[in-house]
Every structure is written in structure tokens, then in C-alpha cells.
Image 1 (cartoon, rainbow, N blue to C red):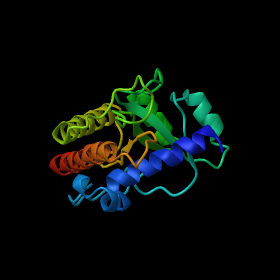
Image 2 (image 1 turned 90 degrees about the vertical axis):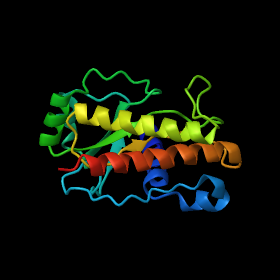
Image 3 (image 1 turned 135 degrees about the vertical axis):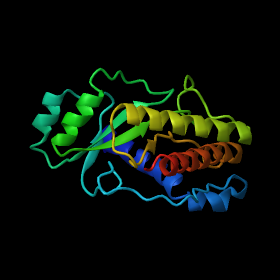
Image 4 (image 1 turned 45 degrees about the vertical axis):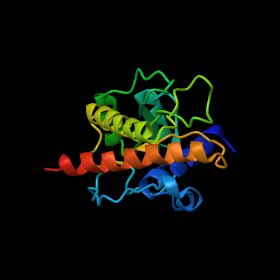
Length: 200
């Protein structure tokens, strides 16, 4: 399996945890209930919310000429790392004008946020989610606001889904699981709050 497909599958799993609530995790760690209960409606043009097809991600957003060359492929969605304290990819191409140009080429953009990582996983040098529940939730709010602000600065469609790239961690570690779920629950609720409060 390619690195790109592996990463995208991990991203989608992380997204499911924050957008759908992570039901399995609720059963195994009830003290850290993921609860994105705020109702949210997404506009038809929002990036990634209504896309079905082949997609991949690139660590660094490629030049426009590369995107144009890829138009001959069956892929029509591209993951881009928009922000996050643990984002390591340089992004010289990722600007508002790049987003506009790529969107005009009929590509969907998947906004990926590489923020705080599980306290028991990822790279040792990564900034981690706190194991203190209140702190993990506060960190989730900060991360959500950072992601929304970064996407807005890039001119991405309002209401777009954001993919929180949470790296693999041992789910048998209940303290670690609780930290991740508290963080993602707070992330999701803040995303929904921002979506509702900023809707005209």
C-alpha cells in the first residue's frame, strides 16, 4: 500500500472520530465521550463534504503546473496540510490564489490539520495532547480555531470539513484514549460553533 493511500485512510479515520463521534471509542472509554451534538448544515459547494471519488494527499502542496498535469488522472481531490503545530511540510505554493486556481480546475481540496498528537504515540518530538481532561478540551478549541482561521485565510469554502490528522496510538492505553477523545470532542464542537456563528 502506498504511503499516500495509507495516510489518507488514517486521515479519514481521524475525521470519522471527530465528525461522527467515534462510537466504538465511547464503548471502550465512556469517561471520554466524543459528543459532536451541534447540528450543522453544509453548503453544496463546500470542499470535501460531498465528494465521492479518488483522492490523495501531498505533504507539500504541488505547483499549479503539476496539478494541471494531474488532470489526466482519475483523481479529483487533493489533501493539503493547511496548518497545525506539528505540520512539518513547507508550503510555498499554498496561498489563497493557489486555492482559487486549483478549485477552478475542478479539484476538491481536503483541508488537513496536523495539530497536537496523542500523548502515548506519534513522534517523540511532536507536541502532544495533555492527559488532563480540561486542558485537552481547551487545546481542542484552540486547534479548531486555528484550523478555521487558516482555511479562511486561504479562501476555502465556508462549511468545509477539516481532517484532524491524529497518528496511530495504542488504544489499550485508556488515559491516552481519553485525552484524544476529549481533544477531538472539543475540536468538533468548536468547529460547529464557528460554523453556526459565522453563517450569514
